[in-house]
Image (tube, rainbow, N blue to C red):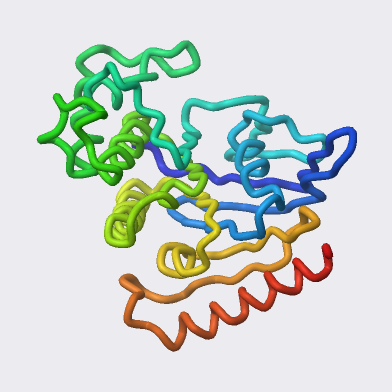
Length: 254
């Protein structure tokens, strides 16, 4: 797998006829870095993610991947949603392989596709489930399949839109650790949109806050080793700082 991609959003604004969503956002994600994007509901987190994925065109500003302007979706930039979006008539193995033959995806020989799928399933611990259908999976297993589908594309950047929000606490903790392991192993760049401050503190190398007015309102490096669950004091101080910035942002927009 190639090294992770350097992603840089520079002055990104997104406006519609009757409202402004993003206003001059500057954001970067380095190879091997997990950046968590927090913010109040409706502030534009998902819009920013879709813009960085090349699915939405910014009104102004630029998004660059390794110094090249983004003109649309790229095969090496993968986007994962809260809903696993598995096709119910396909097995786990075929769901993971889905998309590898799409026109925008670089050609991959059949044997190589099979090898990619096998590696992706191994990475998420689901080699034993390759023949199962989505209806036979738990919520956590379905999320693992969705992550494996993205990994099979061998992305250099992984964009995640609240992918663990619907999971129970134990399964969510397992998926959070899996994400950390995958990024550390592959060196991919990861941008995680979440509404959960604690999730951001446990997973991210850096946390950024998108304010209610669509501008960045805070940036916090998290220089703590994993696992972080026992580092209550340090995490608590960061949590208070982030929560205060979030509350201030919401007051400004009121």
